View 1 (cartoon, rainbow, N blue to C red):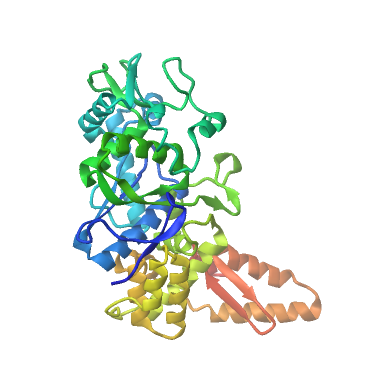
View 2: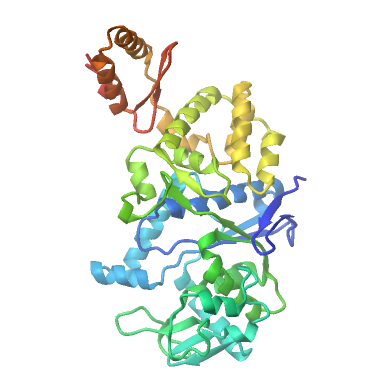
Length: 457
């Protein structure tokens, strides 16, 4: 059996993955808060853990892997969106949940085994909070219930590697008079008449964010499970607080054995933000004509623990590569299993960049069956994702010859007007222009529109 090694954020080292039960490998990943379209950064953990899901299924068998990813459908951001739009909360969360599933499906992500909604697990959350109070790890105050960090000082901070005192000194935490310790965090909070709420021993209210995942993972996966994942922005305080709640409520369990965190995403070398004008959703890209398979390919080219930089150049190159690979594998049956080198790369802490490098070697060797098997293992080259590449190819040889001739003339006459005009026209049509002393290559890029070449004089 393939040996999988994963970098465990909790121990800060790469470890051999040994499941609690090889016949029931279990993974939990924190999902989205559903109030709007998923932006590109939201998609990265989805793709990362989809690849891990596929790898685990390949190694242990699809029937032996359980993957849970939640939806947070009770949150102050959702309440604010409902207030400003005048729409019902349930209508907003139902719509945005489906948007998320549709957009992630376009990126080739398999649906998890379980997709719990927080509002479906309120009784389990209340029960866990009651248990934490009974065990001396939480207290009620002014309609709130808070986790008492001082009650578990020996364990709090083990994931982020910081002491409670260091956290207090450096953290920006909510100051509230009912807190015994500034680091204490909310498990339950009161709701007014305009906010969603449920009856509880502490009055009508709603859960805090952190308790959701602890209650849902416990209900679906038990006191101990194998892998917990998410973006590294969740390591503190969300995942740290999950560990505290879960271990204190279920001291006989381990909660999660292996913690995996993906790095963040940038756009053209800068942090994605609305103020910089480089913020966009997955749906924005899809509507611009960038295929979901291209987005996925760009993601896979960077190791999940490294910052990923989304650029138009990478998208264009990814589309060109995928077109070549799809042409090579058209009408071919995949090999019985992925090449060992590809599988070894994925098993080495999800080295997707290494797997893509091995796929380039398979393509160069003309191993179409091997390339297709490898592609399907990482979620590429499937029939379901191939519609974008099904359009007939355009013969660009005449345009390439024309531009090369214009270049030759320009070099002789020093008049570059015609060459520049043609280059601009081809770029406008969505072609990448590659020029050298020996020739010209026009490569269809993202959003290539052959109609714009018609009538070009």
